[in-house]
Length: 348
Image 1: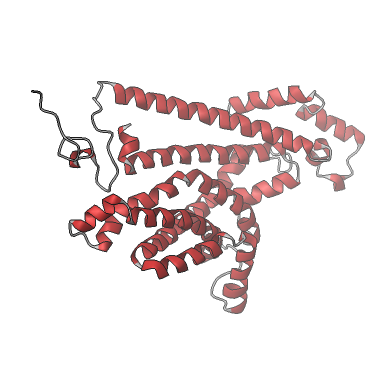
Image 2 (image 1 turned 30 degrees about the vertical axis):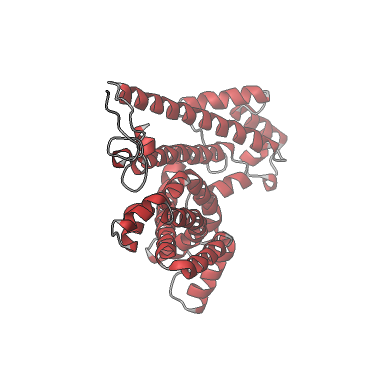
């Protein structure tokens, strides 16, 4: 008689060999097909490249249409705006030079053709290549976004750990702090920080001055609302993991409460935050428009605001495409991080 593995025993369904560390189950019984991991990786890469191309095309199209819907003459914006009092001859020359006298669909196809070759054009207002402007402004925004992202994760993880280890009272207080942080607008928070730390106490400079001290308030302003939102989803996932069967099993084996949190529940708490990394980047970029304006900090956000005001189509398109490309890259990295954290995704 053929011997079969029984459920719950080693080697059987639901047994110890069928479950990964931290309570994440492996899809046991799946045969390893030679070459399958490489085919899966190639398919994943093709999907990511295809989605990146689609996102960039969609962003370029939406920006083109949105700028054209803003009232006013693009040729007038090229010559300095309504206050320039440009002559009819100068406006006609500007339209001819930039192809604005062509039908809208011809302008659209011409823009797509330039973008496909990597030509972002020249800024209407600044008369400087857009690629050069982006190269100059991108490092400042990257430093601001990276600092805010790290601080937001530190605060969110701290609140999640406190909620998991501190009991019901800590969970209630942590929830209140997260809601308050997530609901605070960037412009209000930045203004309050300037009023307190610059005007009243004189501890920090009111505007960015190129020093580490000038980065503190912009980073805190950008990070706190994001930390509040991430903290909410991570705390809920942490509390759910603490009552899961694998956590009860770990306690039965003699694991301390801190060990259950750090070795098992923390991975579950981190998964929602990792999955929301793309949204977090979008939040940071949109918040940078406000924060860089409040603290007079150079960067893509402030550049984008000025470009939209001046109807600078090439510059607006360039900033939007760089932001969209960064979003696609972060989404790919977050997907890889999820696979590294969760064995169920990795083994599939």
